[in-house]
Length: 150
Image (tube, rainbow, N blue to C red; front, top):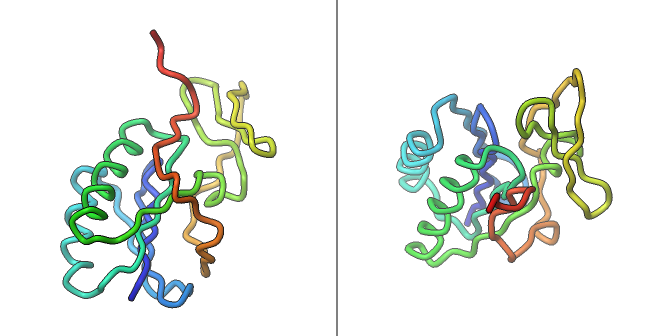
């Protein structure tokens, strides 16, 4: 069995395949999630049997989060494979994540807030070389980082 990790909070989308916690394949796509994920997983499902699906559930691109969650949740149900999640800060060295304008999501301990920065060098999201499933959460709902505007 293999595990798949999906980071689709911005471009490029990254998918990592892990065996026994070690990264064995990394895929990157500049396409939007609704195009990239079906193409990537069509190929991967021919070659691998998954024991777990894991994704970065936010914050980041709202559309990226929604599409990724719906795609992986559906795959999880159809394949009878558990879906896990972890926030995007795990995949970018806990650096600020672009929200909109000059606002960025920042994580302090367990709280995610918005902060304004005039100019900020962003860290790219990276697939870890190893994963430990104890870090991942079964509460896999999307984390948008801000409340809906009413």
